[in-house]
Amino acid sequence: WLDPAEKESLEPASMNKEADAKYFAHDAQAIKKVMDDKPWEKNPKNFATCNISALAGMRMLKHALSGIKKGQARDGGKGLPLEVMGLMVGRPSANSITVIDAIPLPCDGFESEWDVNISQKAMMLMIKVQERIETKGTKEEIIGWYHSHPFEVGVHNNCFMSAIDVNTQSMYQKAIKKHWTAVVIDPLRCVAKSKLEMAAFRAYPDHFKPPADQAPDGEPIRENAGKNWGTYPERYYQLQTRFFMSSIARSTMDLFSKDSLWIRILSNSKIDDEEYSGKVIKRINKATTKMTAAIGVARFEKGSNKDKTNPVADDSSKIAHELCTEQTLGILRHALFCGCKRHGAGDIKSAYLNSK
Image (cartoon, rainbow, N blue to C red; front, side, top):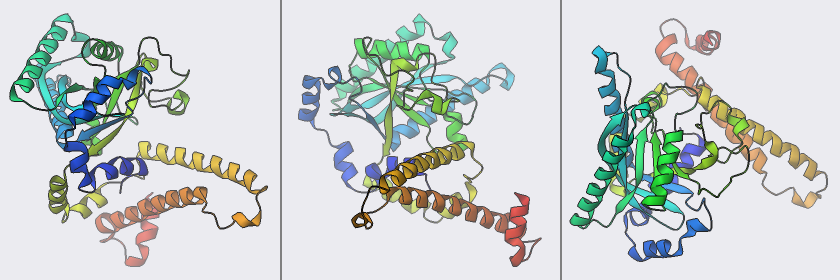
């Protein structure tokens, strides 16, 4: 019951045992080759994907939620949520970053309070953590940092880089590691949407100029006018985020959720979600544009091409199927929780439609 984009981000990394070898095996020679080749010098957007383990994602979320609780406990229970910061452990590959684990740091506060002292404290903690990793003989290394944006829940998530974030990330990429990566997590939206809401980012080199009017996610800024990308969206870009877990963890999660999956399906409603509606509208617009182009091309094609599959029709069918599914679930929810005691079986559908 995920939308296509979410489903695509989960399936390749978590549905079979190949994830164990692909994401957990350490290939020292491959990593050395990446470091020697320095592909980021030829392509500023060389690292296009950030693979995050379920363990690392949940540790980031747990740390971010602790910042919310700590902040709200201040001022007699009227305080604001605090931002938190931590480190990510993993490794680079030819064109992706893999995050295996996350290490919380005792650094929290508001962005306006972020000063030189806190920056120096965070840097010293990074050095100590790296020394501890090397002492233990761990093959992985510190691959980047994460922090939270516990802001008000809206139509769009709060995963973006502020001016201070961009400057910090750029400094880390220059002074620490060229493949250093940042992850921003939106903890309040994670709770509201019951899913991990986080995004990975990297800063552009100082000499690089991206296309005008291009958002960090590669889309035109005008298409998501309500999305906050911070003060300098032209100075960084967003990596595609994928989540993965080991085959053992996957089988365990399936075992735990097998008997309660229907509860999640019935309790989640996308049809009234503004974010989901916006995505559907964008998909419909793209399908319509493709259909218009296909009609123009079809006039010049001969009958021998009739047997070819039509991707426009496939996209339209998928959208229609998703909308019909959501409407059906809405009718079922109403029948189970609202309409059973007041309506007969023949009046359930009409009662639901009247209530809408």
